[in-house]
Image (tube, rainbow, N blue to C red):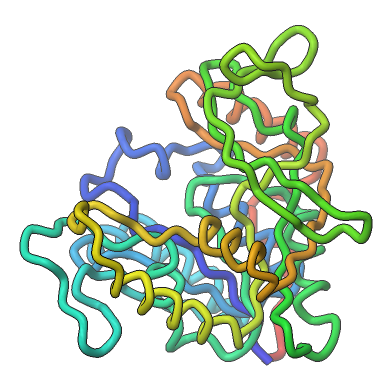
Length: 311
Protein backbone atom coordinates (compact mmCIF):
# COMPACT_ATOMS: atom_id res chain seq x y z
CA UNK A 1 0.00 0.00 0.00
CA UNK A 2 1.20 3.49 -0.82
CA UNK A 3 1.61 6.04 1.93
CA UNK A 4 2.03 9.41 0.24
CA UNK A 5 3.50 12.73 1.22
CA UNK A 6 1.49 15.55 -0.35
CA UNK A 7 3.46 18.80 -0.52
CA UNK A 8 1.40 21.94 -1.04
CA UNK A 9 3.61 24.02 -3.33
CA UNK A 10 1.07 25.87 -5.46
CA UNK A 11 1.92 29.07 -3.61
CA UNK A 12 5.50 29.06 -4.85
CA UNK A 13 6.38 32.26 -6.68
CA UNK A 14 6.40 32.30 -10.46
CA UNK A 15 9.87 33.88 -10.41
CA UNK A 16 12.48 31.35 -9.31
CA UNK A 17 15.77 32.53 -7.87
CA UNK A 18 17.32 33.91 -4.71
CA UNK A 19 14.29 36.04 -3.94
CA UNK A 20 11.97 33.06 -3.46
CA UNK A 21 12.22 31.92 0.15
CA UNK A 22 11.32 28.30 -0.63
CA UNK A 23 14.50 28.04 -2.71
CA UNK A 24 16.85 29.59 -0.17
CA UNK A 25 19.72 27.13 0.46
CA UNK A 26 19.90 26.18 4.14
CA UNK A 27 22.11 23.06 3.99
CA UNK A 28 25.84 22.89 3.46
CA UNK A 29 25.43 21.39 -0.01
CA UNK A 30 22.70 23.77 -1.11
CA UNK A 31 19.74 21.81 0.27
CA UNK A 32 16.46 23.65 0.69
CA UNK A 33 13.96 23.02 3.49
CA UNK A 34 11.76 20.90 1.23
CA UNK A 35 14.65 18.46 0.68
CA UNK A 36 14.77 17.70 4.40
CA UNK A 37 11.01 17.12 4.64
CA UNK A 38 11.17 14.66 1.74
CA UNK A 39 14.20 12.91 3.24
CA UNK A 40 12.53 12.58 6.65
CA UNK A 41 9.29 11.30 5.17
CA UNK A 42 11.08 8.61 3.13
CA UNK A 43 13.15 7.65 6.17
CA UNK A 44 9.90 7.24 8.14
CA UNK A 45 8.39 4.91 5.50
CA UNK A 46 6.49 7.12 3.06
CA UNK A 47 6.87 5.71 -0.44
CA UNK A 48 5.23 8.28 -2.72
CA UNK A 49 5.70 12.05 -3.12
CA UNK A 50 3.04 14.27 -4.68
CA UNK A 51 3.80 17.92 -5.37
CA UNK A 52 0.73 20.13 -5.73
CA UNK A 53 1.68 23.05 -7.97
CA UNK A 54 0.10 25.38 -10.49
CA UNK A 55 0.40 24.46 -14.15
CA UNK A 56 1.86 27.86 -15.01
CA UNK A 57 4.92 27.18 -12.83
CA UNK A 58 5.44 23.56 -13.88
CA UNK A 59 8.48 24.13 -16.09
CA UNK A 60 10.23 26.35 -13.54
CA UNK A 61 9.32 23.99 -10.70
CA UNK A 62 10.71 20.94 -12.46
CA UNK A 63 13.91 22.77 -13.36
CA UNK A 64 14.51 24.16 -9.88
CA UNK A 65 13.14 21.37 -7.67
CA UNK A 66 11.06 18.64 -9.22
CA UNK A 67 13.51 16.94 -11.60
CA UNK A 68 16.28 16.90 -8.99
CA UNK A 69 14.05 15.38 -6.32
CA UNK A 70 12.51 12.94 -8.80
CA UNK A 71 16.00 11.67 -9.65
CA UNK A 72 16.86 11.13 -5.99
CA UNK A 73 13.54 9.37 -5.37
CA UNK A 74 13.92 7.15 -8.44
CA UNK A 75 17.18 5.79 -7.01
CA UNK A 76 15.26 4.84 -3.87
CA UNK A 77 12.23 3.31 -5.61
CA UNK A 78 9.99 6.21 -4.57
CA UNK A 79 7.33 7.46 -6.99
CA UNK A 80 6.95 11.20 -7.54
CA UNK A 81 4.07 13.04 -9.20
CA UNK A 82 3.01 16.59 -9.94
CA UNK A 83 -0.65 17.42 -9.40
CA UNK A 84 -2.09 20.73 -10.54
CA UNK A 85 -4.25 23.11 -8.54
CA UNK A 86 -6.12 25.27 -11.00
CA UNK A 87 -8.83 27.87 -10.60
CA UNK A 88 -11.24 26.00 -12.87
CA UNK A 89 -10.62 22.51 -11.44
CA UNK A 90 -13.99 22.30 -9.68
CA UNK A 91 -16.63 19.64 -8.99
CA UNK A 92 -19.00 18.94 -11.86
CA UNK A 93 -21.55 21.67 -12.42
CA UNK A 94 -19.43 24.52 -11.04
CA UNK A 95 -17.56 27.21 -12.89
CA UNK A 96 -15.05 29.73 -11.57
CA UNK A 97 -16.51 33.25 -11.53
CA UNK A 98 -15.11 35.70 -14.03
CA UNK A 99 -12.28 37.69 -12.51
CA UNK A 100 -11.07 34.99 -10.11
CA UNK A 101 -7.26 34.96 -10.19
CA UNK A 102 -6.20 32.56 -7.42
CA UNK A 103 -6.97 28.93 -6.52
CA UNK A 104 -9.53 28.08 -3.87
CA UNK A 105 -7.38 27.17 -0.87
CA UNK A 106 -5.78 24.15 0.74
CA UNK A 107 -8.77 21.79 0.54
CA UNK A 108 -8.73 22.19 -3.25
CA UNK A 109 -4.95 21.64 -3.15
CA UNK A 110 -5.38 18.29 -1.41
CA UNK A 111 -8.15 17.27 -3.81
CA UNK A 112 -5.82 18.03 -6.72
CA UNK A 113 -3.66 15.11 -5.57
CA UNK A 114 -6.58 12.70 -5.45
CA UNK A 115 -5.77 10.75 -8.62
CA UNK A 116 -2.39 9.73 -7.16
CA UNK A 117 -3.63 8.71 -3.72
CA UNK A 118 -4.19 5.00 -3.10
CA UNK A 119 -3.72 4.87 0.67
CA UNK A 120 -3.24 7.15 3.67
CA UNK A 121 -1.23 10.31 3.23
CA UNK A 122 0.31 13.31 4.96
CA UNK A 123 -0.12 16.92 3.90
CA UNK A 124 2.58 19.52 4.57
CA UNK A 125 3.55 23.02 3.51
CA UNK A 126 6.41 23.29 1.03
CA UNK A 127 8.47 25.78 3.02
CA UNK A 128 8.32 24.39 6.58
CA UNK A 129 10.78 22.10 8.38
CA UNK A 130 8.90 19.65 10.59
CA UNK A 131 11.59 17.32 12.01
CA UNK A 132 12.01 13.57 11.86
CA UNK A 133 9.73 12.68 14.78
CA UNK A 134 6.60 14.15 13.21
CA UNK A 135 6.90 12.08 10.04
CA UNK A 136 7.74 8.89 11.92
CA UNK A 137 4.77 9.21 14.28
CA UNK A 138 2.38 10.21 11.51
CA UNK A 139 3.44 7.21 9.40
CA UNK A 140 2.94 4.84 12.34
CA UNK A 141 -0.50 6.32 13.07
CA UNK A 142 -1.64 6.09 9.46
CA UNK A 143 -0.58 2.46 9.16
CA UNK A 144 -1.66 1.27 12.60
CA UNK A 145 -4.92 -0.48 11.77
CA UNK A 146 -8.29 -0.59 10.04
CA UNK A 147 -10.42 2.50 9.52
CA UNK A 148 -13.55 2.81 11.64
CA UNK A 149 -16.88 4.40 10.74
CA UNK A 150 -15.67 7.80 11.94
CA UNK A 151 -12.61 9.02 10.00
CA UNK A 152 -9.54 9.39 12.21
CA UNK A 153 -6.89 11.90 11.25
CA UNK A 154 -3.77 12.99 13.07
CA UNK A 155 -1.95 16.29 13.44
CA UNK A 156 1.53 16.94 14.76
CA UNK A 157 1.47 19.09 17.89
CA UNK A 158 4.48 21.35 18.33
CA UNK A 159 5.49 23.13 21.51
CA UNK A 160 4.65 26.78 20.93
CA UNK A 161 8.04 27.96 22.14
CA UNK A 162 9.71 25.80 19.48
CA UNK A 163 7.91 27.58 16.65
CA UNK A 164 8.38 31.29 17.35
CA UNK A 165 10.38 33.88 15.43
CA UNK A 166 12.69 36.42 17.01
CA UNK A 167 12.03 38.66 14.00
CA UNK A 168 8.33 39.37 14.48
CA UNK A 169 4.87 38.09 15.26
CA UNK A 170 3.50 34.79 13.92
CA UNK A 171 0.11 33.10 13.65
CA UNK A 172 -0.32 29.68 15.24
CA UNK A 173 -3.23 27.27 15.61
CA UNK A 174 -3.37 26.50 19.34
CA UNK A 175 -4.56 22.93 19.91
CA UNK A 176 -6.99 22.02 22.67
CA UNK A 177 -6.79 18.32 23.53
CA UNK A 178 -8.93 15.97 25.62
CA UNK A 179 -7.67 13.46 28.20
CA UNK A 180 -7.18 10.83 25.48
CA UNK A 181 -5.03 13.04 23.29
CA UNK A 182 -7.71 13.86 20.72
CA UNK A 183 -8.19 17.35 19.36
CA UNK A 184 -11.26 19.23 20.56
CA UNK A 185 -10.60 22.63 18.98
CA UNK A 186 -8.01 24.71 17.16
CA UNK A 187 -7.88 28.40 17.98
CA UNK A 188 -5.99 30.49 15.42
CA UNK A 189 -4.01 33.09 17.35
CA UNK A 190 -2.25 35.96 15.62
CA UNK A 191 0.68 38.23 16.50
CA UNK A 192 2.42 35.76 18.81
CA UNK A 193 5.89 36.93 19.86
CA UNK A 194 8.46 35.50 22.27
CA UNK A 195 8.95 37.21 25.63
CA UNK A 196 11.35 36.81 28.53
CA UNK A 197 8.76 34.64 30.28
CA UNK A 198 7.51 32.70 27.27
CA UNK A 199 5.15 34.22 24.71
CA UNK A 200 2.32 36.66 24.25
CA UNK A 201 -0.24 37.70 21.65
CA UNK A 202 -1.42 41.30 21.58
CA UNK A 203 -0.27 41.74 25.19
CA UNK A 204 -1.91 38.55 26.48
CA UNK A 205 0.52 36.04 28.00
CA UNK A 206 0.62 32.55 26.53
CA UNK A 207 2.08 29.37 27.97
CA UNK A 208 5.09 28.55 25.75
CA UNK A 209 4.38 24.84 26.30
CA UNK A 210 1.00 24.98 24.55
CA UNK A 211 0.68 22.60 21.60
CA UNK A 212 0.18 24.20 18.21
CA UNK A 213 -0.51 22.86 14.74
CA UNK A 214 1.94 23.70 11.96
CA UNK A 215 -0.27 22.00 9.37
CA UNK A 216 1.26 18.54 9.21
CA UNK A 217 -1.88 16.45 8.85
CA UNK A 218 -2.18 12.67 8.54
CA UNK A 219 -5.28 11.69 6.57
CA UNK A 220 -6.93 8.38 5.60
CA UNK A 221 -7.72 7.86 1.92
CA UNK A 222 -11.46 7.74 2.62
CA UNK A 223 -11.37 11.34 3.83
CA UNK A 224 -10.98 12.49 0.23
CA UNK A 225 -14.72 11.93 -0.23
CA UNK A 226 -15.43 14.11 2.80
CA UNK A 227 -13.23 16.86 1.38
CA UNK A 228 -14.88 16.63 -2.03
CA UNK A 229 -18.38 16.91 -0.54
CA UNK A 230 -17.28 19.75 1.72
CA UNK A 231 -15.77 21.64 -1.19
CA UNK A 232 -19.00 21.19 -3.15
CA UNK A 233 -20.99 22.60 -0.22
CA UNK A 234 -18.56 25.51 0.03
CA UNK A 235 -19.04 26.39 -3.63
CA UNK A 236 -22.82 26.39 -3.15
CA UNK A 237 -22.67 29.16 -0.59
CA UNK A 238 -23.77 32.58 -1.77
CA UNK A 239 -21.11 34.95 -0.49
CA UNK A 240 -20.24 38.44 -1.68
CA UNK A 241 -16.46 37.89 -1.79
CA UNK A 242 -16.59 35.14 -4.42
CA UNK A 243 -13.34 36.22 -6.02
CA UNK A 244 -11.23 35.92 -2.85
CA UNK A 245 -12.75 33.34 -0.53
CA UNK A 246 -10.78 30.18 0.16
CA UNK A 247 -11.67 26.79 1.59
CA UNK A 248 -8.92 26.07 4.13
CA UNK A 249 -8.11 22.59 5.42
CA UNK A 250 -7.61 23.43 9.13
CA UNK A 251 -10.80 25.51 9.20
CA UNK A 252 -12.85 22.71 7.65
CA UNK A 253 -11.31 20.11 9.95
CA UNK A 254 -12.25 22.28 12.91
CA UNK A 255 -15.82 22.56 11.61
CA UNK A 256 -16.04 18.76 11.29
CA UNK A 257 -14.67 18.35 14.81
CA UNK A 258 -17.38 20.57 16.24
CA UNK A 259 -19.98 18.47 14.42
CA UNK A 260 -18.43 15.25 15.81
CA UNK A 261 -17.94 13.92 12.27
CA UNK A 262 -14.23 13.13 12.65
CA UNK A 263 -11.61 12.42 15.28
CA UNK A 264 -8.12 13.91 15.22
CA UNK A 265 -5.28 12.46 17.28
CA UNK A 266 -2.68 15.02 18.35
CA UNK A 267 0.84 13.59 18.13
CA UNK A 268 3.08 15.75 20.34
CA UNK A 269 6.63 16.34 19.15
CA UNK A 270 9.54 18.01 20.86
CA UNK A 271 11.21 18.76 17.52
CA UNK A 272 11.79 22.36 16.54
CA UNK A 273 9.84 23.72 13.61
CA UNK A 274 11.78 25.96 11.24
CA UNK A 275 10.53 28.35 8.62
CA UNK A 276 11.52 31.64 7.10
CA UNK A 277 8.53 33.80 7.93
CA UNK A 278 10.87 36.78 7.87
CA UNK A 279 14.04 37.27 5.85
CA UNK A 280 15.86 37.87 9.13
CA UNK A 281 15.08 34.28 10.16
CA UNK A 282 17.38 32.87 7.46
CA UNK A 283 20.75 32.99 9.30
CA UNK A 284 19.30 31.16 12.31
CA UNK A 285 17.81 28.44 10.11
CA UNK A 286 21.11 27.97 8.26
CA UNK A 287 22.94 27.71 11.58
CA UNK A 288 20.49 25.07 12.84
CA UNK A 289 21.08 22.90 9.78
CA UNK A 290 24.84 23.37 10.10
CA UNK A 291 24.60 21.97 13.62
CA UNK A 292 22.44 19.09 12.37
CA UNK A 293 25.12 18.22 9.84
CA UNK A 294 28.04 18.50 12.24
CA UNK A 295 26.31 16.27 14.79
CA UNK A 296 25.58 13.60 12.16
CA UNK A 297 21.82 14.06 12.45
CA UNK A 298 21.83 14.47 8.67
CA UNK A 299 24.43 12.99 6.37
CA UNK A 300 26.11 14.54 3.33
CA UNK A 301 24.93 14.05 0.63
CA UNK A 302 21.49 14.20 2.20
CA UNK A 303 19.77 11.21 0.60
CA UNK A 304 22.76 8.85 0.68
CA UNK A 305 21.76 7.24 4.00
CA UNK A 306 18.36 6.07 2.75
CA UNK A 307 17.70 2.53 1.58
CA UNK A 308 15.98 1.47 -1.62
CA UNK A 309 12.34 0.62 -0.94
CA UNK A 310 10.61 -2.51 -2.22
CA UNK A 311 7.29 -1.19 -3.52
